[in-house]
Length: 114
Length: 109
Image 1 (cartoon, rainbow over the protein chains, first blue to last red):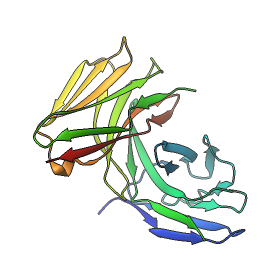
Image 2: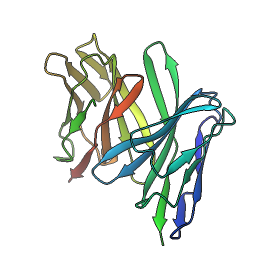
Image 3: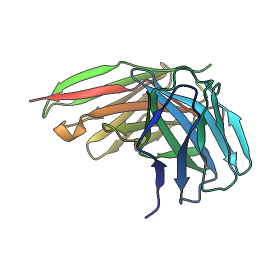
């Protein structure tokens, strides 16, 4: 089955700790994205990558880092510099069909601070 | 930056039609999308409309686009309990997809 997987489903972070959220896709999509979802605020773009070994900051990149060493994988690290990390994190990948771009989302990771 | 706005909540009676509205600012958007998010899950593309269309119908879903007023709506006919979810309007803008804040649809018996 093709799709996007995210792990873990729930993640707990202690103060001052870096944590990494996994995102893997087997859809052969070039582009991948990380969003943060807070209640009543919709989705905010953290980082995105249009191609392997390249990525760009989104609207709220501070306190986060990413890598894109493989087409299938786009892990997100929440660093200790992110002071309010509690949120639902969504990974997506997309394929462009002309001007139409359909994003496919993973099931999400909920990050909680201890 | 460009913006997409939706009301946060909508409550409808089971069997009635639901209409979820969205306004946006980027008049150059080519495609406009509706996504559905069920509790604790990711988003799923429901439907989309190309900007040169006024209406698109797909089974119980009808999308209406008013480009002049930059207004997009999603109508769900014969709303069922399984339609309870958050619905996101999204537009393409400057090589990115911009999402609205989502409308939580609740169904009452």
